[in-house]
Image (tube, rainbow, N blue to C red; front, top):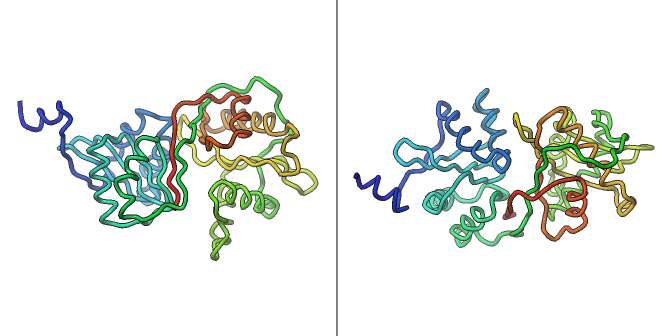
Amino acid sequence: MTIAERDRILGFHSGVVRNVTQRELPEALALARREPEINGFVISRIQLALVDHWRLGGALWGYFIGDHLSSMLFVGANIVPVNTDFPARQAFAGELMRTGRRSSSILGNQNEVLDLWEQISMYWGKARAIREAQPFLSMSIDPLGAIDSRVRTVVAKEIDLLFPACVDMFTQEVGISPIANGGETQYKRRVAEGIDSGMTFAVIEDDEVHFKAEIGFATDSVAQLQGVWVNPKLRGSGIAVPALSAVIVAVRAKFAHTVTLYVNDFNTPARKTYERVGFQQLSLFSTILF
C-alpha cells in the first residue's frame, strides 16, 4: 500500500487546487451530476462552457488528488462548493484567502458553506448577512390544485412594467437595492435577458404586475425558480398558489422535469405556499452575503 492510498483510506488525503481545464469539463460535469438538483447551478454553467468556455461565467476550481477530480468550487459573482470534504474546503479556503474577496455571496449545501466561511471569515471581514438555514425544495410532478390561466411569459415590451417588481423582490430578498450606486442599467439588462429567453412568467392586468416568477437557470433535467413575487396589494388573497402552480406546469413542459428553489427558513408565508404547491424539502442551503 502506498502512502497516498493509506492516507486516502484514513481520510488524510492531500491534493492541489487548480483551474479545471476545458478538456476536464466532462469529468467536472459527471462529478456535479452526482447531485443534479443540489448542483444545478454549476451544472448549467459547465454545460454552457462545454459549448464555449467563455460562457462559464467565472472560474471553476478543482481539488485534485493525483489526477482525480474529487471536489470543485465555482468562483464568480457567487461562490458555490461542489462535493467538498474538509480537506478540499481547507485547500479552497487557502486560495480564497490568497486571492481576496471578489464575489457577492457564498451559497450551497449548509455544512459546506458554513465550514468554508468559518475558515475564511477572519480574512474576508464581516458578512453583510448570513442566512444559515434555507430549505432547498424540489418537485418532479405537476401541481394537483387549481391553475391560474392568466400566467404567461412576459414579452420584451413589458419590461418597464415588470422592472419595479423585480427591484422590489431583489431588495426584499437580498437586503440591498440592485439599482443602488448606479446599478440600474446592468440590472435592467439582466431582467431583459430573462424575458428574452422566455424564462420570466407573470400575471399582468391593466398594466399592473400581480405576480411574477423567473427561472434562474435550467439544465437538461433541472430548472430553478427565483424571484417569486406577489403584488403587496394582493398578498393574502390566494393568488400565489394557483399562479405558482401554473409556472410549475409551464416550466416542466418547456424546460426541465424537476423544479427546485430555496427559501429563507423565516419566510413562513412563502414556505406554506411552496408546500401547498407540492414542493418537498431535499436539503438545507446556506448563503453568506457581502
